[in-house]
Length: 316
Image (cartoon, rainbow, N blue to C red; front, side, top):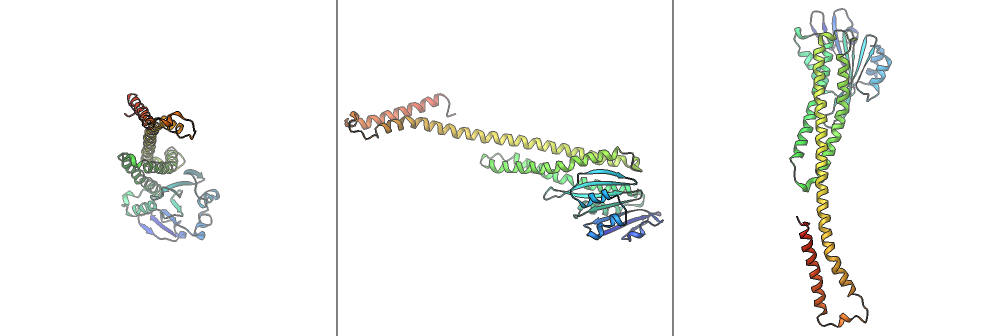
């Protein structure tokens, strides 16, 4: 689906204009959104807008790293939205010309919807042109990163408060799942941060000086998100190390218990194995109190070992 909005030179808003009418002399600037386009609609990037073939190719082949390319009078942006369920990156492409922007995305984008609605609600005095619309698109993309990061922080706080050692395996699975989500977010947010750094430092985009503070604000948000992600990654590493230490301590306790039991029963087993041999001439077998004497020796050895281990502090 292709939708359009345009502002005339007398600040009138027009929507759903045909593409052929957007280049009229009365149009101040316009926005064309390719929302889940068909193959025929996607071809218009080349046949109607005459964008650079490399930029059109990047639009068709997903998933590109966030970047900014300059082609003559058109600036091409590759940006990423984040799926709130899977945390996977979804590509959103944008062309910025001298008096237009064109957005292109194969997935339904909440961010584009929000930006579109915001532009439609703008007052006349706030309609600063197509570059401001490009700022709104980027701002909405970054704003939707925050709920994903906040959700991960909530999950981390829940795990941190779960101290039951009976659930260590489940908690470890949760920690590694969160680390996987953080890695996905990092692969999106860090390149977007670098992209905004290029944008605010560029002198090739017209009218950038007027809106540099706006784009700098987006860059500040991305810096904050990057710090939150790194902080959460450090927290997951600490939780992982803590759970591994707890698990190792439990294993040591179990092994110590088994070692004590083995050490106590080894001499008893040795004595029992000797008298379990069926030799005909064993003097002790004819002793009347030999059975009770052997049991007494076995119990004495076992009790002595237990007292010795207790003195060594093995039961603390």
